[in-house]
Image (tube, rainbow, N blue to C red; front, side, top):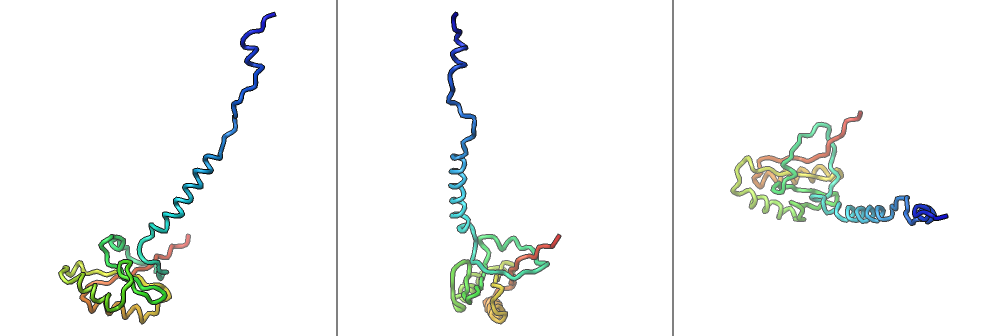
Length: 148
């Protein structure tokens, strides 16, 4: 009796694996996690301060622009202007230089102060900014999310 060709194929065991191999996917996910962990702090803009919260703040999208003048006051009492640490005297001089030829409508400074900063210190910085010729000052806050 002759054995057909199909009979020989049925007797062999194939090396085909029907399970999904998740090891390459896990490797890719770990690499992506590491990339995001490294790049996320680099995406943060400005100086980190714990802003006070307000229920009804006005939206000011121009505060996020590169040309915006932002003065930050940290909990430790340091002053930053556009992410560069400066002294009070340097702040006043830089503001005067920056806005010397600016139109009155362009003289806008955003102040973001840490929630733990003494109120008197914030008022001193506001006075210093006004003395340098700035027409408008905006105090940056975080919005309190409504409870549902």
